[in-house]
Length: 262
Image (cartoon, rainbow, N blue to C red; front, side, top):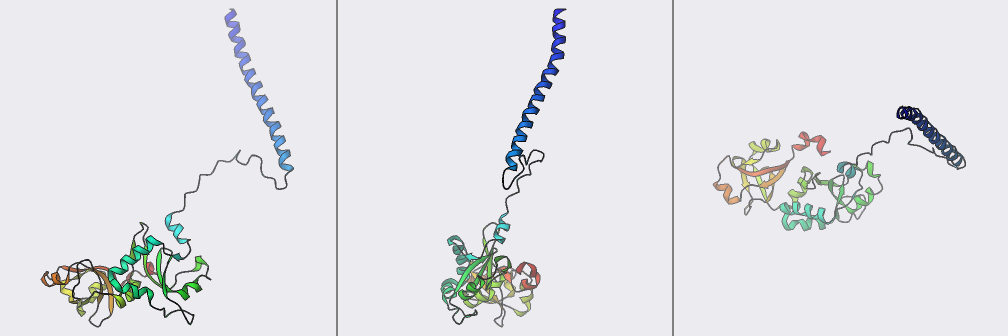
């Protein structure tokens, strides 16, 4: 009987104790809140005392992607690694003529003395421009700057560098190796196809497999460029359907890939 009375008393007192404890916490928090409000009112630029009390915390925004970071980046000279990658691609086509490509006096620009040519990186693209044009471009806001000089290639998201068709005129003027196509086969190459032996009219002597070659018409008009799949000697022994030049870029891209090139 005594144990039952004790259990009944515990059941009655426990809710009362919990209610009293909760009421005490509410009173304590109310005093703290009133004191906090008094401190906020005394400040010159008051801020909410509990800004996140009734608001869920927003998730952290994702970090900007690499492509977005490159878009907002300013035009700048190439660093050592980027310069090496660009020079290796150009040297594959020009060889020792690469020196003349970079050290020759510039002939474009608004100044009487445009200086020499230099390379600049802007929005993942590498530009070949005179020093005078680069100086003038510094006065243009970077988001509004589309480019400067001649684009010769671009860096991919994986960090590799590729020459684009814009560099065709520069490569044609300084190339060591060339191939000439038969007139009735130019159309196939301008649609992005590699060059078979049946399309080959002539090839520079001493061309080796892996050399960069500029593809020309019989009237010496640059059509594009690629990589020699066979040496000049092997081309004479190859089958008519064997590929002799691997396609990289052609002038037909100005129509096929207009949006990508702009």
